[in-house]
Every structure is written in structure tokens, then in C-alpha cells.
Amino acid sequence: MTDTILQVRDLDMHFPIGGSFFGKPSDIVRAVDNVSFDVKRRETFGIVGESGSGKTTLGRCIMRVLNPSGGSILLNRNESASVELCAASRPQLREVWKDMRMVFQDPQSSLNPRLRVLELVGQCIRKSEGLGGRELADRVADLLRQVGLRPEFLMRYPNAFSGGQRQRLGIARALATNPELIIADEAVSALDVSIQAQILNLLQDLQDQFDLTYVFIAHDLAVVEHICDRIAVMYLGQIVELAETDELFRAPKHPYTRALLNAVPVPDPRLRRKTKVLAGKPADDPDAHTGCRFAARCAHATDLCRTKTPPRKKLGTTDVLCHFAGEI
Image (cartoon, rainbow, N blue to C red; front, top):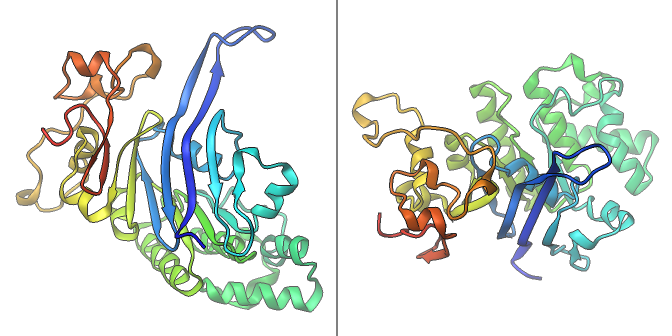
């Protein structure tokens, strides 16, 4: 069994835009562009970036909610053969989705308000294992206990729960098929800070208990620093830096990563960073220029950055997409 559970290679997700109803599109948006990374078993792999950076689209491509435009996604399963997700048929995906589950950002909209907890959490168990009646109820009750909810809640509807409790229901639903990999897409961003801490602690406890692997998508750097082992920083569809968490926060190599860290609020004025916070916003059309996509906002950009795509460099344990990585 390999130590790598997920291998993503040269992944693209391009969306056509413009054009008439029956005509060809006038342009494309490269929401995910030539992205590659590995996820190790039992680690928490973070993906961060501004809104519009492509991190949610990347997560949906991995789950095959979206069909990637190109590239490869290989899932190395524990007890079954490895599966190339980009080439998998619908029946194959239905089998794979038992091992790979997703926790969504908004627990209010991701839970069907017309279904009771027993059906919300138990429907995938019923389909995959054929359980019903008392067996199914006992299984769902055990899942509720594991996520910190009382089994008496089985017959309640989602609107009877708080936001934090709904997210616990979402986690219980993700655990129902005994998955190996869970993709958490902004799983705590809609919650109060105190509830965020409880959910993060729950995710870590479940990871230790069930040997889970997480792909944790977020925009809050304080959250990913707390829970992630490695972090990929995305900008306009590309991973511009990938490093171990301690290394990323101690010595960021890419100017965009530094800008993100400088934007994190620090309560003590004496400890605030002196570097200027990043100005401007991402270009609406990343294909409108060649070279580095961050060049228009980078204080260190030169003509080389504006005309030539930067190479990917390896600096210690860090992968960085920058012409001057290690020099600035």
C-alpha cells in the first residue's frame, strides 16, 4: 500500500465564456490551471487563497462533481485497486465515493430540510450496505455519538439544530461510508469562532480515531495553521507555493504568500508586521497577459516576470512558482 492516497497531475478546469447561444465561446476562464500535488495518508493537506483563486473548483474536480478539462487524479484506495478519477465511469465513481466524501461550507443549504436526521445520515448507508430498520437506526445513532450529538435527535429535522450542530450532521454523513479521504470545503468559515474551534478539534479527533486523510480548503490562515500538515497556496488557478505548515509560516518564499500572511490581523500593535499589505485585486482575465499571473500586484516584478512564465523551483521542502524565489 502506497503512502500517497491522492496524486493530482497537470489538472486543468477551464470554463468557456462569451459567445452567442449557438456560437462558439469567445474566451475561457482557467479556474484551475496545470495543478499538481500529492496528498499523503493520514495528513491534513490545506489549500488556501483569495476568493476566486480556484480552490473550491479544485476540490470539486477531485470529487468529480466537475469534469476536469485535462490532467490526472489518481486515488490509491486501501483495500481496492487504484482509480483514475478523470477517466472513471459513473458506476465506478459511485463505488469510489464510498471512500471519498465531502463536507460543505454551508450546513444550512447542504442538508435537505425535508429529511429527518435518520434519513439524512442513513440514506447512503441504506444504498451501499442495504441496512434498514433497527440496524440502520443503531448505525446512525453511533455516528451521532461520534460527532458529539445525542442519538435522540434521530427523528428531528435540520431546522431544529444550530449551525454548529448542522455541521456535525454533515460530518456524520461524510463518515457514514467509512471513507479514507474527506474534502472539507470551507467547513468552518460559516461558524462562530468558538464553534470553529470545537469543529476543528472534532475533525482532529476523528482523524486519529479512523486514520482519515483531509483535504482542507479554507481562506482563514489561522485555521489552516492550526489543523494542516502541509499547505498549498493558490492564486488565479495555480499553486504558487506548497510547503510544510511550519516552514510556510516561518519563511514564506512567494510574494503572494507573504502578502496573505501580512493581512492576518495581529491584536498586539507591537507584533504587527511592517510589510505593506497587498493592494489591488486579481485580474479578471488571467490570460490577458503572459508571464507570472501575480506580476501586476507584486512589488518585486520585473519585465522578466511580465513576459515569461516562472519556473517551479524546489527550495528545501518548499515548491514555489517564482522567478526570484530564494532571492527576495
